[in-house]
Amino acid sequence: MPVTTARVTTARPERYIKQLVSHLGHKASAELAADGRGTITFRQGTCVLAPIGHQLDLIATAGDLDALADVQEIVTRHLVRFAGEEEDLGVEWTAPVAGEDLDLVHPLLDDYLLTQCTPPDDLLQELIVETREVTGRAAGMQVSRDEGAFLTMLVQLVGARNAVEVGVFTGYSSLCIARGLAEGGRLLACDVNDEWAAIARSYWERAGVADRIDLKIGPAIDTLRALPVEPVIDIAFIDADKTGYAAYYEEIVQRLRPGGLVVLDNVFLGGRVLDPACQGVDHVAMRRLNDLIVADDRVDSVMLAVRDGVTLARKR
Ligand SMILES: C[S@@+](CC[C@H](N)C(=O)[O-])C[C@H]1O[C@@H](n2cnc3c(N)ncnc32)[C@H](O)[C@@H]1O
Image (cartoon, rainbow, N blue to C red; front, side):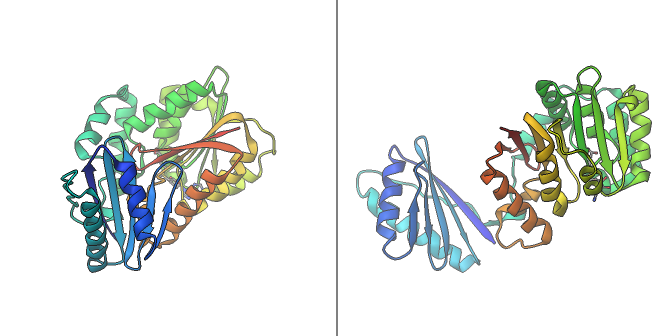
């Protein structure tokens, strides 16, 4: 589904949003949220209007390019009319893109971020290379070096002694988690693929953390359901089959101690969660779970634009 955005410089973004919502609300469905964001749903598509400092951000979506052009035209025309002679508003829309083609983070910034974190040591570097050589395209599943450093830091910040990972692959993220554990801490690592886990095991041994990792080969849901329902988990990282996330989340939240953290990877699905045209099983499942977590009053949550999107949900 095509999306286009425009960033308009103005000292009065809130005023324009109110005017647009009020005026266009007679012909379309229009809502003004408490934080000043407006949403106008036309027959042709939708436009979200967000006040960001001295800027008005417009985000238009529609089923096809013609309908999108209509939405752009209606919003631009009214905006320019409301500004009248007081302000010369330059409304420049970006070229339309579909959700899956969005650059979630600019490639330049993406690359910079990789250089601005504690670098992986020689062993992690070796694991990156071996994973690429042995697993080929599947190597893209491995967490990036900044996400790995982020995981170690989260485990340390939580002071975790009891960690769970769903989705081990060749063990990069497990190694990052295990290295952050407090004295005597343990990681329960779940995966279905013994071949990839064999690589993981050899690196855990070389890193001297194998004795603190319990690897369970089998469907993660069975492993999680077999755990006692006691609030003892300090941190859990979910990075496996996307349709399983909701069930993993539920089993883990029940066993999370107050203040404990669930970390979920790939919550953007390459931008496809933003695009209503993407209706694959993974997209639907992830969109539903993202909404469920926001509404889950057992946790406080925040979604971060780290790589493909990372949600942190902290048990109240
Ligand atoms: C994205 S990879 C994990 C990457 C890993 N976190 C890393 O940094 O290298 C997903 C993993 O989930 C595993 N997986 C898929 N379905 C699973 C299931 N039902 N139960 C447990 N693991 C599963 C796959 O075998 C794969 O190793």
